[in-house]
Image (cartoon, rainbow, N blue to C red; front, side, top):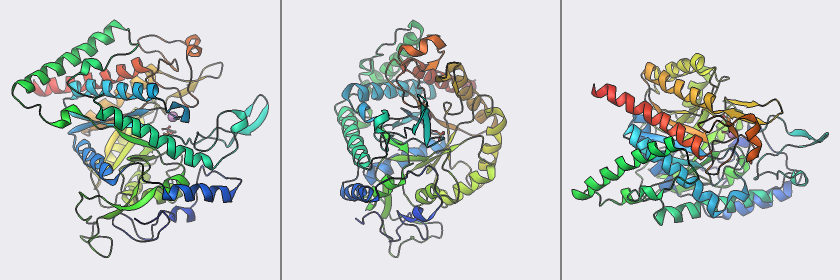
Length: 483
Ligand code: PEP
Ligand code: CO
C-alpha cells in the first residue's frame, strides 16, 4: 500500500495525477489553518490509520450503480445536511438506518426494482459556506464550517486540525455501528413489520405503508413456499456511506493505492492498463464509498475536480442553475474519460421554479453525447429550495421539494431518460424544519423542534411521503406499460 502523497501512476489515475496534485490548482472553500505544524501532525496521524471502507465494498457499490445507470435499480441517498460528532449515538444512527430502510421498502414496492442505499452519514462533517465569517450579536466571528473544521459554539470557531482525526474516529464508529446493526438483522426483509414506523401517527401514511409491507410479506411467503428465499441477500442489505469531498487535506490522507482482491485488471480507453504492468491497484478514497463535488467547488480547472479525477470511487457532481451544459460535458470527460456506466451521478438541484427551464437542456446535452445511458440522474429537490422566513429562519417548503421532484420525474419521462435516484436531507428524528407536509407545519411551528445547525431536513413523515410520491410515479408508469 502506498502512502498518500505518493506520485506513482496506477490504474484509475490520470496522467500527472497523485493524491496531492490538487495542491497546485486554484481552490475554493479552502480552510486557512493558523498552525501549519499542527495540521501536518494531524494528517500524519491520518496517513497511517487504516481505511474506513474497503476497495471491495467500493467496487460492490460501483456494480450496483451500474445497474442504476442501466435503469435496473433505483438509488436512495439521504441523511443530514451537516452531521455532527454528537450524532454518533446508537438511537440517532438507528433512527436514520430505519428511515432509509422504510423508504427503500416503499420504493421497491413502487418501482419493482432493487434499491441501492447510500447514507449521507459517517463522514458528512464539512460544509461549504458563502462567507468565511458571519455576524453574531453584532460581532464578526468565523462561520461554522462543520465539525471537521470548527465547532458551532462561538468559543470553538477557530479551525482546529485535530478535528480531522476526530472526524475519522466518529466516521469509523458510526460505520462500525451501521455494519453491526445490519449484520444483526436490523434490515431483515423477513421481518419488515419490525421496521416500526416510530412516531408516525398519520393514519393515511400508516395505511399506505402497511399496504406496501403486506405486499412484500406476501411475496416473501411465496418465495419461501417455493424455496427461493435461501439467499443471504434477502436477509441482509447494504447501506453505503457518502459525504461531500470538500476538505481535500482529509480526503488526500485517506486515499490509498490498493487492490480489490476480487477485481480484474483495469483496462483504460486505449485498451491498455494505465500502469506499467497489468495492475489491479487503484487509488481509492477510503474515507467513504461515495463522495461528491459540491455546487461551489466544481470548477473544471480547480483543485476538487483535480482530486476527484484520480480516485476509483463512484462520485457525484452537483448540477444547478449555474452549470452550463458545456461544463457538464467537460466535467464528464475529465472525471470519467472511459465512460464507465454508473461512475458519475449527476445530482441535479435547480429549485422548483427553475427545473422545467433548465433540466431538459442538461439531459439533452448528456444523453446526446458519448455519455448516453452512462450517468445516473439523481434529483436533489432540497438545495434549490432553501428560503428564509420573515424572522430569518432557514427553511424549505415541502410543496417546493415535492414539486421539484415531481417535475423532474415528468421531465425525464418526456425526454426518454431515466431518473435513477433521489438525494435528500432527512433525519429519523421528529424535527420541525421544513414547512408543510401532511402535518401542515407552519412558520410558527418551526421553533417546536428545530435542531439543524445547517440546512432544514425532512422529518420521518415528510421523507416517507416523498418516497410514496416516487413509488406512485413508477406504479403508474408500470400500469400504463401493462395497458
Ligand atoms: C449539500 O449537499 O449539503 C450542499 C451544500 O449542496 P450544494 O453543493 O448542492 O449546494
Ligand atoms: Co445542505
